[in-house]
Image (cartoon, rainbow, N blue to C red; front, side):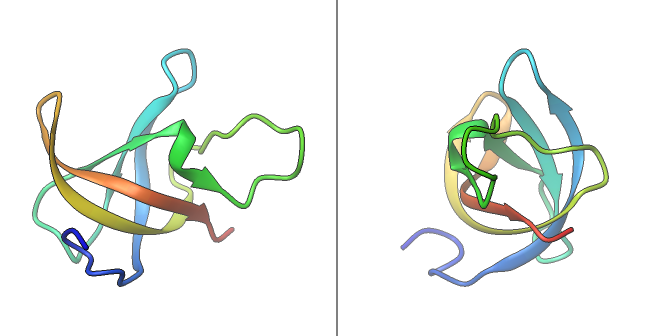
Length: 81
């Protein structure tokens, strides 16, 4: 079931590109940064755009993937702020 094995990790949003719909999260559980697509963001109020803010604390699950220059990709993300 990917890198996380279904385990939920904590991290912090390092960057978010609203116009492109993706960003980067860092977590102490992983040496590499994690690529996040807006479609994996959950817990947003109905009708709201799925996005994160820089420095948001998040929970996420992760898998190994070649995504642009990243080796890790989030498969579920939720802001905990």
